[in-house]
Every structure is written in C-alpha cells, then in structure tokens.
Image (cartoon, rainbow, N blue to C red):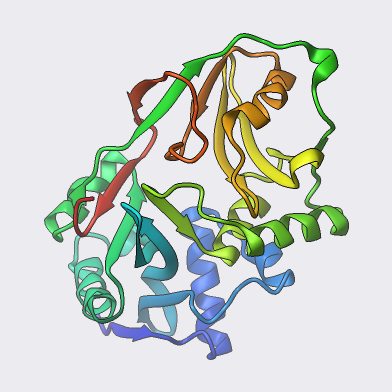
Length: 276
C-alpha cells in the first residue's frame, strides 16, 4: 500500500477536491456554502494520507483565540478527523497525528477535539486526555409575554441576515473569562450548518443568541455580541420560548446567571492535550 502523507496542500485543486470527497464520504460534509461565502481560509490546515491521489484519512487543524482562566492562549481545534472504512486499523491515523502534533506543538498552547465514545479510546491511546465538561442549568419562571423586547429569527439564506451575523461575529467579545474561544470563520461555519435555524437577534442589545429548543427546555449554545449582556438584560427574551428550564452550554461567568445546577455534558466527549 503506497501511502503519501501531505499537509498544507489546499492550493492543489485536485488534492483539495479529493479531500472534499473524503469529507463527504466520512462525515456527509458539504463545504459548498462555506466556500461560496468566502469563509474557507488558509488557516484551515489538513494533514492527510493519500493513495493513488485520493484522500483516505485526515486530521484538520484550525486555530482559535482562547481565554483560559483570564489568560489569552493560542488554541487549535482538530476537525474533519477520520479514516475511510477500508483503511482503518492500519496505523494511518496514528502516523497523521504524529505529523500534525509535531507542527501543532510548535505553534499552539492548547489542542482539543470533540468526538464520541466509539472513537475516544483511540485518541486517548495517542496521548489526548478526556476533559469532563459541565454546563449550568436553571429553572426560570416565565415572564410577561407582552413585555418581551423585539426579537428576530434570522434566515441565513437572506444576505442582510447573514451580513448581520457576520458583523457580530467579527466584533464579538469573548463569552467567558473562564474558558472562551473565538474563530470568526469557524463560527460562521457552525451557523451555516449546525445552527442555521437557531439564530435569534435581540434588536435592543445588538446581540445574537443561538438557541436550541428541546422538548421541555431551551439550550443556549452561544451569545455573540460586542458587549456581553447580563442575564437580567436577556431574561425577558428567554421567556419568548415559553419554557422554564434553560441550559447554558458555555461558561456563563460574564452573563451572571442566578443560582444554577451543574450537569455533566453527555452528548459528546472533549479530548485535550492538557487539562484546564
């Protein structure tokens, strides 16, 4: 098996197209919206294995600005990780990781990856460590619906809405001093794909709130704004969904939520190169 390992190759149109076929095959991931908006940038770096010109395994590295405990850090998130089924258990992903890690260690303070339980053991063998994640949840009484401030649910197919979100993403402050992340193009990727139907604009605060509605609760994934609001600024908005349980899936130290219960995140596993 003649394997060619490559990185920093996206200027090669054929290799980039092969990577996109790999991403579609293994993650059902279509980059077309991200590309058409001009958001695929040179910092999205692939470390990949090729056989006969076809990408068969990859780890992508994307840098983020981070704050951990009030200290600025250079972080790197690992994305689009995987190996096509016919090439697994052959040491290919281990070799890719060693090459990526040597590059990452020279440039970044912190590296992390989100995965599921079926793959976590493999990355632990490579030296990554599980980091337990917790989120805060509160019970909050519904407030007077007649007092809810103007709220707009955004549509990412409308250029003005997309432009509004893009501006807020570029101007945003960190959501937390305890643990915060920022990468404009990566956030816009998440908004175009995972969060596209969960974006609400609070006109009074020039603020984007990403809200997932579950059966009995709402889950706040992110707040994107130039100046982080306090909980008292947005609690009327939260009554808009008519649910009295609220999960905050980010560190809410700046938001200043009332007394809360901590729960362990069970939907995904966070793996890190060092604990925080």
